[in-house]
Image 1 (tube, helix red, strand yellow):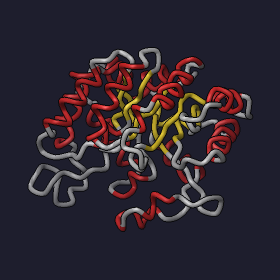
Image 2 (cartoon, one colour; image 1 turned 180 degrees about the vertical axis):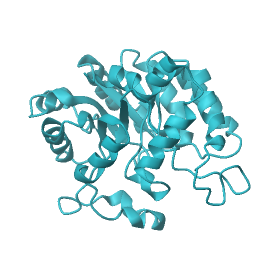
Image 3 (cartoon, rainbow, N blue to C red; image 1 turned 60 degrees about the vertical axis):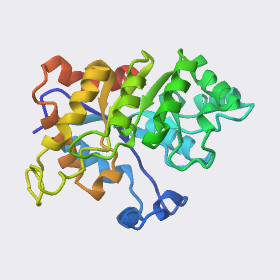
Image 4 (cartoon, rainbow, N blue to C red; image 1 turned 135 degrees about the vertical axis):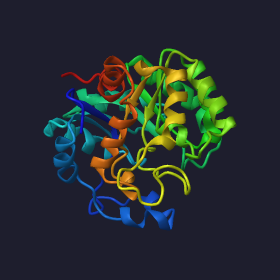
Length: 296
């Protein structure tokens, strides 16, 4: 059961395949169950039942039309409290583009920008001078930058975050680490290096639907969905970032490849169950409110 305090889901998506395709869905056969539309009308009742009172919707495509649609969603749907959108950070006119987004209906809900480095063809994108100017433009207007990247790009993220100290960098999905019985040492070293920078925070997202490895507690279809295999990752994240720089995100609907939305929220609540009430409140709601400017 959810705790008495409200939960903020700091990371989910929506997409309508009748409006635009989602090219990433064609990148792997395992993504076949996601090749349909996922709308807020499907998520909202599940979120409410799970004790989630506010969410952050995050971009999925690098097309300028998507972010205005997400802002409209935030302006019309009370559940959506913040938007992490997309704009071309390498464009010379990035400051103007950010101003135009802020002026749209729902523009006050624009809290950050994300660029999908998982599919970015330029391996050096994050360290380009023109991108650096775009990151500085985000800092100038008080927006954040979400980092979605493979673990191999974490060292570049460390350099980028150190280079723009006035910008808050948000690491999605613990850097897309592969959840194994023991955390990968290379990932752990880069992860902790990023955490040492005060302008970084991390989302505990993308892991709560990962089943326990075969032979581990919770494997074999345990309906209780044991979260013991996730504890080393929470412990490292707590030691590195602390609860005031950690936040829960469901990664819906991607999480449905492994677990239902209620199960993901239940797993997050269970994993944080041994923490103090203040630490738990930070991870489940307060950090997201502070980072993304969510009121209420």
